[in-house]
Image 1 (cartoon, helix red, strand yellow):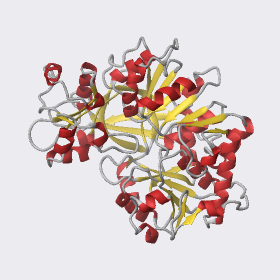
Image 2: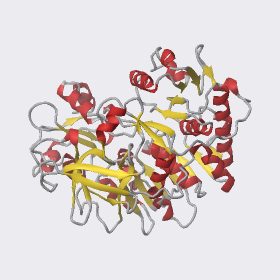
Image 3: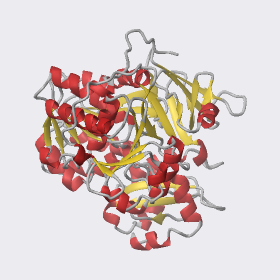
Image 4: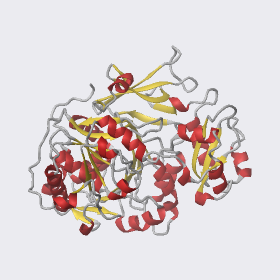
Amino acid sequence: MLLQRIGNRGIRLGTLLDRAAARYPTNVLLLDHDLDIAPERGRSLTATDAADLVDDFGSRLWRAGTRPGDHVVIHKSNAFDITLLAIATVRIGAVPVLLSPHLDGETVAALLRRVDRPYLLTDEAKLTGSLPAEVFTLSRRVLLASGRHEHATALADLAGAPRVPALEMPPEQPTLVTHTSGTTGLPKLAVHTAFGLEARYRPQALAIALLRRREPVAFHVSFVHSRLFTALAIALLRGFPVAALVDADPERVAPFFARLRPAVLEAHPNTYMSWERLAADPRRPLSNVKFFSSTFDALHPRTVRALIGASHRRSAKFGQIYGQSEIGPCVARTYGRSRSPEADGRCVGIPFPGMTGVRVVSRDGRRPTAASPGHIEVSSDGRIRTYLGDPDRFAQQDSGGWWRMGDLGYRTRWGCLHVLDREVDEIPGFGSTLSVEDRLLGRLTELTELVILEAGEGRPVPVVCTRDDLPLDRVAWRRAVADLPWMAPPVQWRRADLPQTATTKVKRLELAHLIASGGHEDAARGAGA
């Protein structure tokens, strides 16, 4: 492995808030919503408050029978207490398995089978709404974070449980399980160790290093994503005020940011796209941002330009990190006002020296190029240990310490990695769909989403969403695509109707199936197409 483990004790999630409170007891954690497990605490917690909540609910889980090494599947309504309950689970030596609140009930049931009779920590809304009755037979015991159910144990009834000291498990053992995006089928369960999370922590700490003062850090990141835990550790252990958002609606984000004035901002790429309109907001909600960060997918150049332009900081930067749930951050680059994201096409950067490695494996025996991209593979100590319940799938992607990312690309003579397409999304003879999408988004500012799909026989199909779901300007579209590869007429959808993952990625294969089967007609009519 590339990263030396000297001094790496693991990230120690279970005591994260204890250590943060010991260093900066009055540092604040701000929310845009109430916690389901403790609505009386309000939307502003000190590090001491948060540490006490974790201690309290860890002790309740212990009283419910949870013990070291047990798996606790957490699938509840969307709120930051998902993260707090996960930390509480680790604090008593158990392993949280985080499932997105957006997963449907049948998918949750399928993943419960992979975990093999875990504890299920959910809430009344999920049990009476989306979850099938079989979750009771698939689980050892069902616990409720909020609400009541005759066949489940409410954590509220375990209040006052004797406090249990924190248990620190060996750093090479599993400490957290998250699921993959599920863009190509049933999500896989990625098993993280404390060693692996610590390896991911180091390169990501660079964003905070750019700040000389302890200024607010804001996140709109899925509460079930491993990235949130390393991000919290970076900020809280250095005493930076943290804001965690559940709502990405620009109309509600704008006043929140106008009051908070965040200096570091992290969100999913599609969230950033929806926040482009904040650049023109008279309250200037992004004016104090010094560093924008995205660690999930390549960003469209239009989005980068708009957000950097909204900052009044002299040296505002946009950091793009290319990675994956299974491997963590592995390649990075930054943009500024003087460095256009269009200058290098689909370049996502270079590896972290001494921490990650990247290679591109040829598909035709020749050196990979833009015209003939190869398979992108990465090496890092941040790699997961296995897929829970599916070790054979893990072995298929592991190539002697190199992890196949499922993307196609090439490296320049200077070492810059260019990502052109997902392997499953490649359209033979079309070129890079991502590159064409970038160009169209730059030419048509009315677009808020664009994906180009191979949906059955014939030309590739562009699926578009527009600002406020207004009808697409077809004349402007024809001008914009005049010099691009031949495509079918665009199909317009409401953005809310697109099938998406927990990190707001469009599920391209599912969308392509809907388009090919004619399932897009109602969405197209509703969007004014």
